Amino acid sequence: MEKTRQEGIRRAIAELNAAGDVAIVAHKGPDGDAIGSSLALASALRAVGKRVRVYARREDVGAPSVLDGMDSLSPPEAAATDPKPDLLVCLDCATVARIAVPHFRDGIASFRTLVIDHHESNPRYGTVNFVVDDASSTSELVFDILKAAGWPVSREAAEALWVGITTDTGRFSYSSTHPSTLECGAELLRLGVRQWHLNDEVFCKASLAATRLRALAYASLEMWCDGAVATIRLDADAYESLGCAKSDSEDFVDIPRAVRGAAMAVFFYRSFSAEPVTHVSLRSCDGRVDACAFASIFGGGGHRAAAGATLDCGLAEAERRVREALSGFPGISPATGDGGEVSPGSAVNRDFVSPSPSRRDAGTPCR
Ligand code: AMP
Ligand code: MN
Ligand code: MN
Image (cartoon, rainbow, N blue to C red; front, side):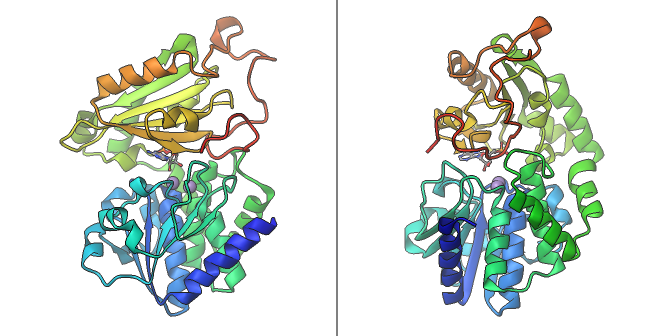
């Protein structure tokens, strides 16, 4: 393991050891990595006698709510009246603005914070930062910490880490899957992870309503920029009429990403809030485009391969703005051979297969 990573682990353990009362928070709209890393760290810290609260809204958690430990979540609004923690741990959260709890987000400077993350756009906003850009997931970093500290990893914690790692790596398939990631997978299985159950629940099953929502997403497919950009969209009415939440569409951006020849996949979805807000999920399909650099045009961020942004306008206006910014953006050119398909020898980076963090040497780094 690299020296800097070892040093980051050492400093993170020192922070955790010094704290008796720990608050854990991840990013808004928690995905498998956000919730998995949070539950795993909480479980291990409780086992060594610390008081730990994990702040997340249960209803915001989609398929990962199959995990044990979901009952122990504290609602975000409770943070304002709970005792001040000795340490605030921010997991998988690229920026202060993305922190899921307003009390922590608005008062970040008044807390001692440990940031554990793997977003290349992370500006290192913590008191102590353990940020590894090319790590598969925050869950892998948390597992590193637990092992190095010698803290017990229960089956409950191991399963949370499994969900975090598998969701962020597309089940060990993206280029962010390193040998160390697969070794983590093997170690987690040895700790009793029921992978058949978790994988089925997280990746294969969906409610009938969410399956119908997926059909709407498929039907909305549009190709832009001469086939270089594949897009889908869902407005708030689509979610509401089916009784679905945002978490029901967690992996829908994989629909446009699967269109052969597309360099960029975009999923637009309208927020439920009264103000017009549209979220954009971005995926670089094959390495031609830096999704993080594109997201930063709109104040967003993430990884080169997978990024997002939130626009303060309705769906139609968001589509207009994004479309305008896409035309002429580096890498957005049709990768056509005959029939609009990627031809051998086209501009595709053949080493790149990831909608998750990719290697930093591929193109302009996003900071
Ligand atoms: P998503 O498309 O929501 O799955 O997000 C893709 C990646 O971009 C994830 O790693 C997110 O944490 C990150 N991300 C999404 N939105 C933002 C944002 N507004 N700012 C920074 N990172 C973001
Ligand atoms: Mn995440
Ligand atoms: Mn992550």
